[in-house]
Amino acid sequence: MPGLAARLHRWISARPARTGAADAVTRRDLAGLLAAGGVLAASPAAALAPDGFAALGWKERDTLLRGLAGVSAAGDAGLSARAAALVAGIGATMPEAPYLHALYQRYPALPAGQGTRRPAVSADLALIEQAVEAAQALRIGYTDLQDRETEREIWPLALVYPAHGIFVLAWCRKREAYRRFFAHSVRWAAPAGTGFTVQRLALLQGLVADEAGRLAGVSA
Image (cartoon, rainbow, N blue to C red; front, top):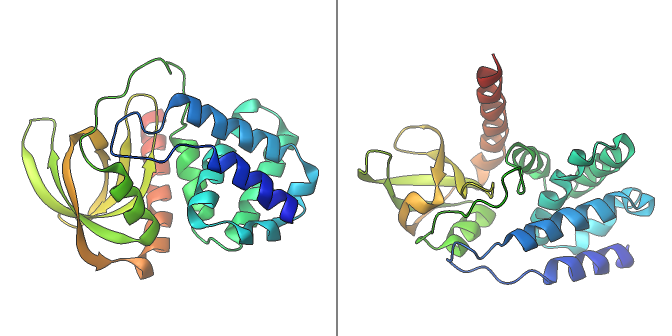
């Protein structure tokens, strides 16, 4: 599907390159992702041609998953079904796609109260994003709510961008548990020199289940 791939490249290439700045991913960028996901999901041809995603890189497919995560908010069953077909199509060449999509739905990019300004981030978000993509471990210095800084190794699984702050969703080697780190509380980050490619899919599956459990606990 050259036409599909070309359209996705145009949508995605319009995003500015990320830096370590807190505003590197702006609300306008996120709104554009949601719009692109909605337009693509509204195209029956796109839902019938998942092979077109093979032409896209990991970052491009991840970007599209973020856009498609907002489609269900439209309340249109047909649109949501086509979005689900697209996620399945992406998953044909990106096994982690359904789990990342579920996380992006759990942490919507543009919730109510979108006028809230995110706290400033000093850590290098581009480095963290690269570690997520490559399944590479990071060492970080993290300041907790009691203003205590600890050094730990994490396996970063996803970056999410709700309005009130950027989160690094990760497996913490120090605690041997899933943790949600506020990006603005990550004082520094550096490659740890090891990877977790073999464990990533199972960890993402477990993270989605952990998030569902937390949500159920809040609702109970």
